[in-house]
Length: 114
Image (cartoon, rainbow, N blue to C red; front, side, top):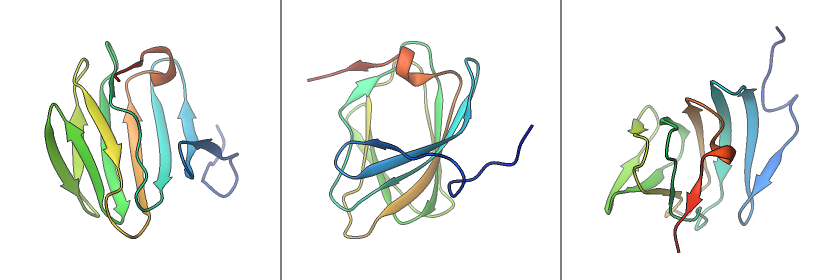
């Protein structure tokens, strides 16, 4: 076991300037710290088997979940059940920093939607 943080781990860039740091990356559980710049988001998608929990550290994260938009601020969290169609994005003018805990590796269990 080793101490980990975003300063000592490699960046995993995604999207248009967003970044993730894989704090824990196991087959049965994954935790990432992520940042999304203003105006950037991910593609709407779902995970057939993976459950996720988003927890905001700084800024405001918007999560579109099954057609409803949830705005999360610091200290707010939201669970995403397996099969739920969702999209995380930053609709504000400042970056957002958050944690995502997943019940498995989402890269192996992701279906993007148009």
